[in-house]
Length: 127
Image 1 (cartoon, helix red, strand yellow):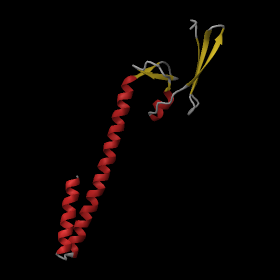
Image 2: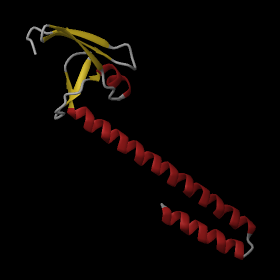
Image 3: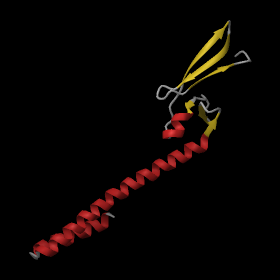
Image 4: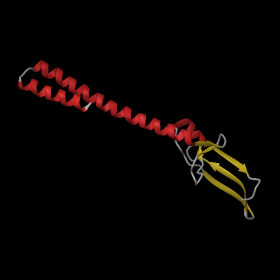
């Protein structure tokens, strides 16, 4: 695309040197359109990159419930909000709060700080 822009620029310069006003105007319009196409091409490439990134993440998602998800291969097993992912393809880490009894966790509450998504889970096995 940069080649087209450079050719139009060179042609516009030549037309100005020849003092052909009408040809100069047409070539400047071609140059402007080439720049617009180059900008649009860059934006489309960025959108394609973002869609590929989302697709790659989608393939790594492990769903636990309607409330939260994590990523396969994540050793920390961070919990993310499934609502935010499904709605906006955003990985929003959920906060968790543990309820303890003696030395055991008896329930966990997960909460998203972006949307109203939350869930409580009772644990039957002490951690």
